[in-house]
Length: 323
Ligand code: GLV
Image (cartoon, rainbow, N blue to C red; front, side, top):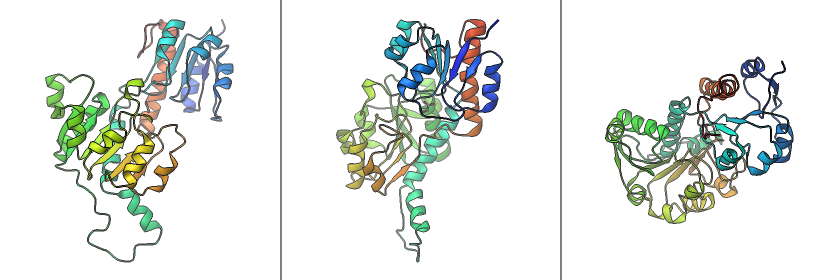
């Protein structure tokens, strides 16, 4: 009997391709070519399943051209590249990779916050440029993490992981804002206090964004929100590009309306707003918050397991819709 045909849209660990090949006829992209939407659609046309990443857009147009498609397994916890309503209407299941990346991503969010507050990359560039010829009392003096107020916007699994690190490891005072308030036990585990978005903006010394991207969260942090933050505050975005208005942020950093920012995600990435590249008080990383080797392997395996479970047992492990 012939195996179902699937597409693995981007390069992944060879052992994951190997596992998938035991169940499927796999077309892979181990050369990691960047495909246009039209190319992706063409490749998907004769497939029943796909392993995608967060930049592979699956919308009504793609779905209409690929009537055989039954499942798209995203190798990411975020899934704003999926038009879930259109997928449900087309009878296509979407899956993501929750849980396996929570702790690694929380580690990275915390690291980015520390690097930002303590001006690590800015000072490294100075050293590498050969500018360090004497020590001075205020050289790259930043702000403290321990004992400071940590604000978290978006208190899901990763937000709670960052809160726990701050509260238990660094004695931080944790406040958060979220669409819905956590139950008392979860708040107690994070030692976190629920506040309005306005109080969060005004009070946080370090504000970390961990909310999902949607039309509702587009530019959740723009010029008006940045103006409410303390001039000594830092902002960290490990959520999604588009949640922050990057042009407004670059202007706020240039004018020192906030002290510094750490960004792992960007509007229109992999392009980065040119003004962010010219301000010194920002730490920039290329969307790597979940990028530890064990976690990336776990994500790829979970995406593969979703495809295998769906076709062998009729049920995916981490479904996003009831297609
Ligand atoms: C990465 O951004 C993810 O959503 O997993």
